Length: 180
Image 1 (spheres, rainbow, N blue to C red):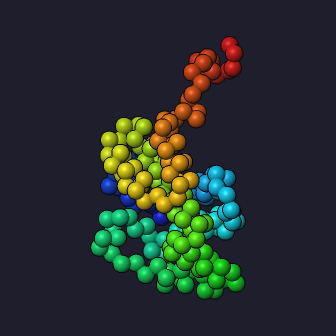
Image 2 (cartoon, one colour; image 1 turned 135 degrees about the vertical axis):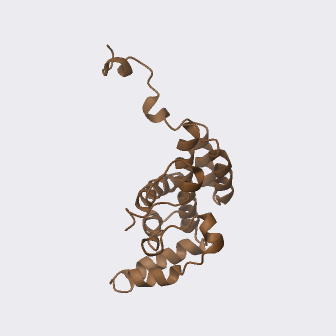
């Protein structure tokens, strides 16, 4: 279901898009990077938290910030329905609760990983010309809670999103080979 559930906020931005599953995949990678940049992190718990943080959306759909102004979602019920029949469902439920409470260091980093995953998509949209992305990016930055998350965000915003693959301006782009 998460593969077929779109992240609904992009409709307001006017460009970009991804499924909840694609978003979750990116969140896990961002969390891994943040864990490498931080000390005293239970990496396994952090990554599992990120893996399951949007699981309720398989039942509720993605609620963007506009939707949340008008619609109340019973996430606890969605989590119970998704996990009660699983022998490890209690673990998943606890991880989702920890994520939502944002008290532990891992939950705070998971929260920032979720926001930075959105920021990466917004940066891509900005770099290809969406002039509305800057305002969205500003709000994402304001949601960050960890020093490490803010540091990674600063680095992301200082580079062009296509630099990782298009930084070599040599002959490879002309003839498909290194050197000539």
